[in-house]
Image 1 (cartoon, one colour):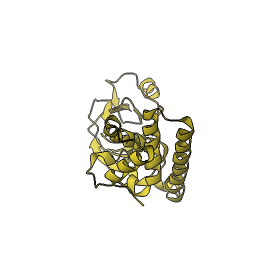
Image 2 (spheres, one colour; image 1 turned 180 degrees about the vertical axis):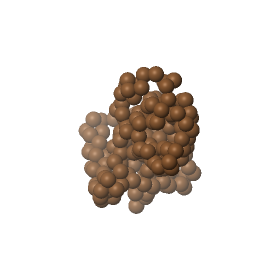
Image 3 (cartoon, helix red, strand yellow; image 1 turned 120 degrees about the horizontal axis):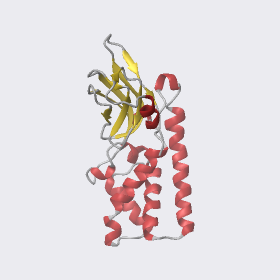
Length: 216
């Protein structure tokens, strides 16, 4: 079983028995919120990506990819052609370790500085070629056509349905007992998805990598 965008919207309306205009207009929001909860709670290896870029010499900030969620690794190519991997730290550590941004050197540490940037320490002393391996946010089901699907709508349809129903029923200020039932079914679906994504897919952290989640 899988859902197209149109089918999932229809299922939400059928379960809630609600076709009121403002409710229907908010269906894309319910679906996106469900997707966000799934992505923030389950590590799936297919949502990893590698992107190459360049450190800017003299600039301690390094732009994060637009679809970035959490880092796995960040490396640069040194003058000898070797990949040097940076250690992930808290921003305060990086700034304490290297308090003078104008002083440059070979980068050793990185941290999530804000929603758009990493902070590098020491400040890069050259325009090093970089490679970042990270957990990314896939395109939402709501961004496609009515007949469109995504990996989540095809392979995590139970989580998508009940995650969306939780948001929809919260919007409706529905009965707590039914909300609790939807939460239970959603939780069960997440456990099954975690078993697939974090147990069955991942066999060796050294070989496959381990996600580093920034502090919330």
